[in-house]
Amino acid sequence: MQSSLLAEATNTLIEQGIDVVTEHQDCPKPVIEAAARGGIMTVGYHADAHSVAPDAWVTGAYWTWGPTMADLVIQAVMGTYKPNHLRLGIDGGVVDLAPSAPMFPTRCSRKCSM
Image (cartoon, rainbow, N blue to C red; front, side, top):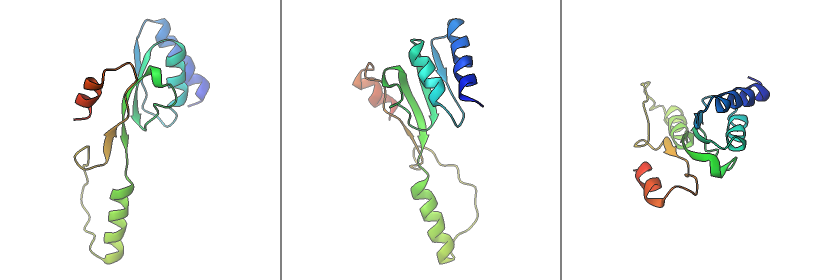
């Protein structure tokens, strides 16, 4: 989707009175920037984008597949890989939470990351 359409959709939602948006696509920056300009908060998904608009960022789940993929490649090269269904999350080291906006008390940020 074009960046301008993402920003336009976000602006339309802001005009309707919403106060938090999230995005689930490959181009979160226009949504986050529009949220910041519109004075609302955003919750991210798939990537840590808190640097785009730190004061409008609540938090976001992001994926760090590197170590898992490296392990799978090593298994394949060594001939020990066995196909299976991977369901990995925070406990598996694949999902984490991005930093919270500075306005959130540290105790809230700590609870979210537990």
